[in-house]
Image 1 (cartoon, one colour):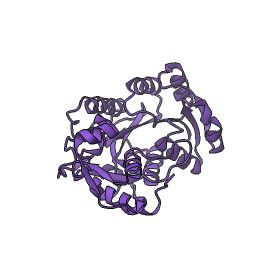
Image 2 (spheres, helix red, strand yellow):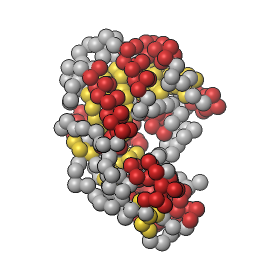
Image 3 (cartoon, rainbow, N blue to C red):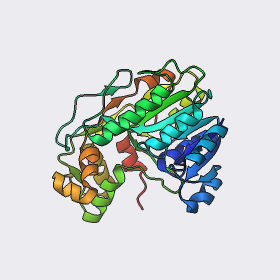
Image 4 (cartoon, rainbow, N blue to C red):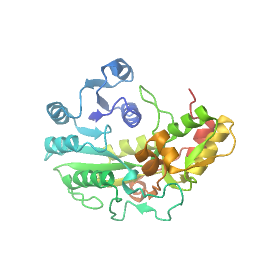
Length: 311
């Protein structure tokens, strides 16, 4: 297949592009950074320099490709609407990347939620405005394919999927090889000599290894039955206290310390500290496993201790 992929120089997009190329697909990759063009070309990606706001460029690339993978920005509604309009009634595939913070709570690191959201069961967004906006974009993508709550019904018009990633870990390649949630904890620990977590770090996130995630993108593209909404999560979740202890062992530091929300917000930003590092985000990937996806890489704590790169 000829794939147009946004976010080609990013952590998610780079891993997906590498996986697709390995399986014989061709990838034209959008980046807004001219300086990474040579690195993308060396990885086998045909670079396209541009912005998600460039409607004409997105329309042109979508119409020439067999499928579009949007891995650049979960919350850019304009890009999603452009892709849906360009691909409508084409019989092609649109995959949109989302994230499980859409169902995150406001635990502030003080409790572990017993609620595990299952992609085989309809759900609503969290209360935060950003989560409601992301949920609306996800719904627009699913509905554009006629997949309804669980998929099944896109026909020849357009096959759409939302892959909603949990906490991704693993070693990326290319210009932006790092995951999002773990490096801020590591950087703070290395600068202060103490690993700190929001509240007591009792909040839990589902997790997925980068390579397992990329496997699902390839399966979603090539499996005709795949459509609708999918959580992307491996077999285990982890609390931030557990993640913090793994970081401490890797760095040879002492016990993990709790951090009040104001102090954490001063270091990491109020929204990121409260609604990412301090939230629960637990999901079950029932529909992905039904497609035949079998995540198999080591858990996040093992990766931190054994494989996580330290600059």
